[in-house]
Image (cartoon, rainbow, N blue to C red):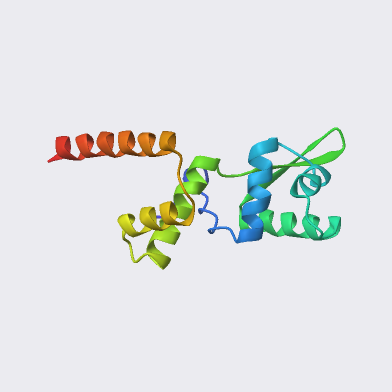
Length: 137
């Protein structure tokens, strides 16, 4: 029996390309914005029409949504930043690090020094996860 139209879950958008991540990051910083605002926030040498075309493709892929306000098209990320970060990290974890969370974390920490505050927060988060995992057993 086919699902009812109201019960259909829209498919998750694909993991974004690096150029798409730049646009998503700009929208997460700005909130709902026009192509012009995103283009200016990117500060890249590419032209306005390149940004426009990329954002139109991102709508087709389900990465962005577009609404009209005061006769202007306004764009927003379809997926919240923290949810997309988890998807990107999961994709990277599987494709590059063979599913090893330890290798991913060590790669990230080796790529750029972490502040002592960041390291303390990471330790706290690991301890919290460890306590949760022990509680599940």
